[in-house]
Image (tube, rainbow, N blue to C red; front, side, top):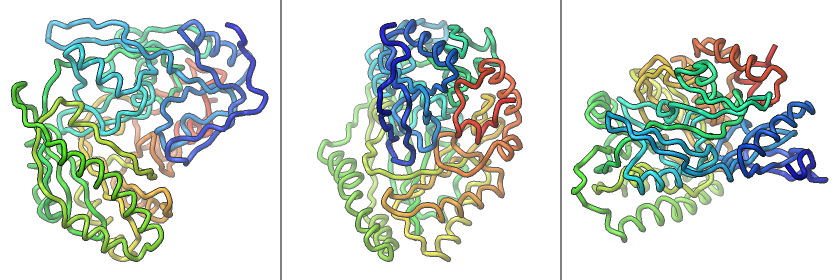
Length: 447
């Protein structure tokens, strides 16, 4: 590879989307194909340099930070093959650098779709699965549960095709392991025939929601809600499958007003006012929660799942046992009332089925996700620390890509397969090529 090993004379500063992390790598590489990726990894290992792959920079943590080699996988972003399955699903192999927005569009063009998605589609496939990205649905898992195979470039420069049947330990670490198994070159996903959803969004009093939460979660394929701090009001979202000919699009003007003007433009102005005058936040939230109105529409699944999020924020999210979600929210409410902490962003609450992915936040238990956000121009530490203390009482597990304060000692008690993951990690990366400070913090240093 021409120029292999040559880096810029002055390190370029990389920053993530939330501006919570930055790095000045010695070398920034954009391999054009698998062969160049292998050479980059092998060269870094041979020269003792750390190497981390970076996707869209949407993680709030230091997962992608390195002072060594930073790999961008933008050129490894094509559809490789689609293999239909007898049960109607298909196995689709794509380059690991593909953005979710391109994945969704490419699947739709082929009459296919992901079973479930989160509400942001800017991440790469590799970044999304490696940090445990998820959507909502009591009978559905996160994106990693939809992965059936990975092509990994290990620290030695070997290319390994791994799955449940071939090196299952490496497969577990590759599909959700913060990039510590190696650099993902391609991912094989199990996808389903394209489907449509009916979205019903409606306000609801928080006490009534918490009293009837189990029915709301179980009676809808996808259920989530947003709670406005300092108010007793929530916005509920219920997404359920409908027939392909059920076409009730959201009127263009309503979509423009709700999703662009109110959710982004006006909300940015509201947050700026909150940053300038924190004392008015409770009144701002009261007004925002009172003007919520119901709406119902249908659309392709990815169009309904994904929302536009342009207001910059900090986020922490914890996975807690599903049955403890009401307790957690009541305690958070008590803390907010007692402190009057200025928080203009609503809390987001989602749900997932138990799964068997080693490092999944939903490993072994039905899960509720409680995500707290703060506008990027406002202090977040006291709020996040308080919520972290509350979820600790119910063995909350932090999202791997969002802010938190736990280390591997505490995480080892929360993840029964963490020791197994570290054994595989030591085998796949004995010299620590894929380590960084965040990886050492949450998984532990290699022996």
